[in-house]
Image 1 (spheres, one colour):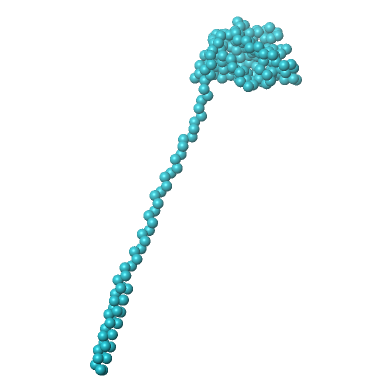
Image 2 (cartoon, helix red, strand yellow):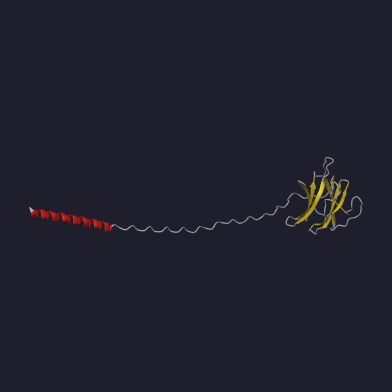
Length: 207
């Protein structure tokens, strides 16, 4: 009986040793966790697209029809309002084929008459006015004036040499009793064009 008991103890010890060896083997054979690879760096962002700054477009040329002088437009201005000529401006437009003179007007648009004359005289004195150019265009506005209620002139440059291709000069020829007269000295007799905008009257001379 003692021998059988000893054998049984030996068998149990062997089983325990086998189990411990298996457990140790499993623990040591457990694969190590692989390190997580670092996240790849994001590609550099593309530089923002810069749109080109829009360039200013040139004003379109006036394409309305040309006419021959004389030109007359008649209006009835309610009294006592008298339109006042406040500015005279001129510019050459060689890309469009004309020179332009612009009258700034305060108040209603007056009647006007535009015609060629052989000589320019001052109103009301009748004295001749010397003007650069070989042809003369006379612009008469009525009722209109180039002075304020106190009598102070509103036109700071009553006469000017310009030297544009067609428009060579201008001169204030009259500002008397509600009649305003302006003379243009031109290179030659040419076609003209008249237009109106709020507060403006413009005269084009074909170059």
